[in-house]
Every structure is written in C-alpha cells, then in structure tokens.
Length: 101
Image 1 (cartoon, rainbow, N blue to C red):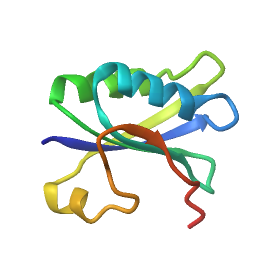
Image 2: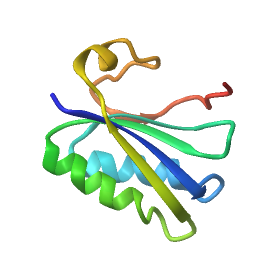
Image 3: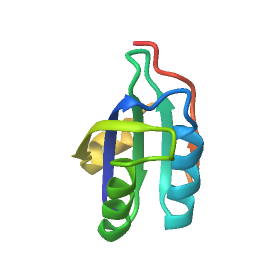
Image 4: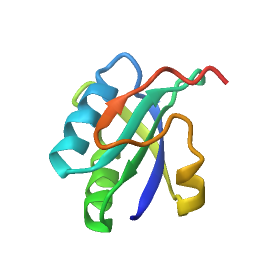
C-alpha cells in the first residue's frame, strides 16, 4: 500500500497541528502517525491510497487555522522503509512521542 512521509516547516508546533492532522487523516481513512520534532517541525507518516495521500498533502500545506506553514516536504516510502519505521504504523492514525534526535 502506498505510504508517504511529510515534514512540515513553519509555525506548526503549539497550534494544534498534530491533533488536526490526526482528525484529517482519520477522516480520509489513512493509517499512520504524526509527531513533533526537536527542530520545530512536524513529521507525519501516512499509509493509504494515492488520492487520499494527495488530499492529506494538500491539507498539510495549510494545516489548522493557527498554523503558518512555510514548506511541506513529501517523500514516498517504499515498503521496506515502511516496515522498518519506528514507531510502527498500525490500523489507526495517532500522535506519537516527540523525536528528540
């Protein structure tokens, strides 16, 4: 199944971005996770069909109302990369712990 990693830059922490991303991804029927990163970005991994991933990518380019997105880097993840991800992707879309590295 297709998967993408999103790295969102701008004013994206402290504005409800993770919560809103979970809500939007669940609405779209995607699986995956979202987290803050120590560098101030938000990272998300989503799995689902291409049309729904495209919709999530468009949504991340604006985010919730308080966000000010500057850039979104979207990368397709091959199956082997998805299988080795930590945290793993399960049957839902969830928030996970901040990446401190």
